[in-house]
Image 1 (cartoon, rainbow over the protein chains, first blue to last red):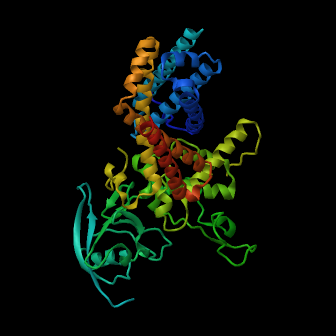
Image 2: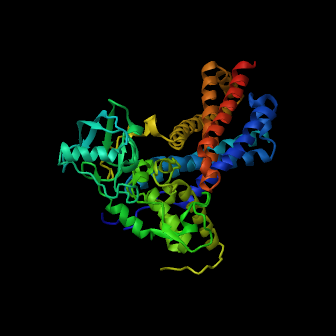
Image 3: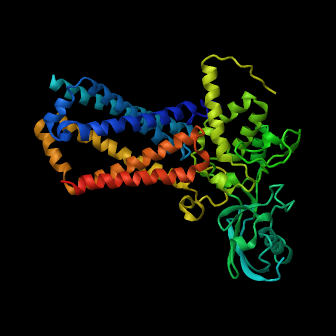
Length: 124
Length: 250
Length: 128
């Protein structure tokens, strides 16, 4: 096709793959921490609005939760991309997939970060 | 050879030209200690001379006779009939998956052989390098300068079994990657790593381990692919952090 | 699609007669990945209730304690354990660790996942 380069668009090379694997390992670790803190350590198990606001008053918490959100979303969307790559998309279709995943991923991160910042500000 | 005879039904995949594939059955009297390839050959000799199949050495060195036997990849010259069916049973024979079919049981291995060539796959290696590092020593005289034919016979069974190769013919496949790992061990040519370190190379493998399970020749392609991944990452890190190594190209 | 002409039927992937644990692990990983993605979306949306103030969130928590949601939570825990432990196995084998013992490692990790699932089932349903 006119305008297409002779090299196919990158599917999943070493860097994306490494990002996914290392992201996955990080998610596993941070999820463990997130789960233990949220449901076992935090008073009341974060089951009421006030408990959640108090939880977000601790300074390290919003930082950790935003970081966790970014790891999870990036691992998830890289994984979705891998699954879709097995359907053998053409380069053009892959461009669309990448666009949608990028927008969706960044959107999810921004929404989540906004929510976290909102909760933190309510406690201040 | 025992003198018992079994009666089995051979269910062979037939496909000529652009016609859709169909199955044809042949009742056959066989000695259960013969091999599947013998049964196929008997069908060709006495029942249907238009049956196409590939065979050469009949002793697992040439890799020509790989086929799907009851849905599983096998080297038919060493697959006993007794191990895949029973008296009165059915023997289903199909061509290898993930290769284009030329005729009946014969598939087009052209692209595969081309890739093995690009991988600088060498048929002969020094004794120490020809074995997997975790294999027990096969030979009684270590230290001597001996060479032997390497394990991979390029039969294509691993590629047929691989789910990755199933979805993409651009994927190099286990045999080729194992060949690259083997060649890289001997020559340390970083061009080989570049060939494997590619989205259709080592990074396409999803760790199904089907290849190692069907290999009739102890190549263990899955282990070799993981080893190649390690080497590729280490090589990239070295390059990124500036350790300048002489890059040899042959 | 590509050059396959030997029957390339999708359901062959699920034929249990000769599939290695590796292939099942791969299929399981993908299925749990899709389930967890769905959960991620639901979780992010549900947490928007927090933004709407105390009443909205506390109402949501009441909903979260109903049996249907609890079963859903069990599925999420199960999917998370399976996907996570399997992922660790994949990460290890990709760096050459434990490649030759894949079957045993997979069985062991799935046993750990099963134990984890039972523990959570007791704490969610068995306890108060």
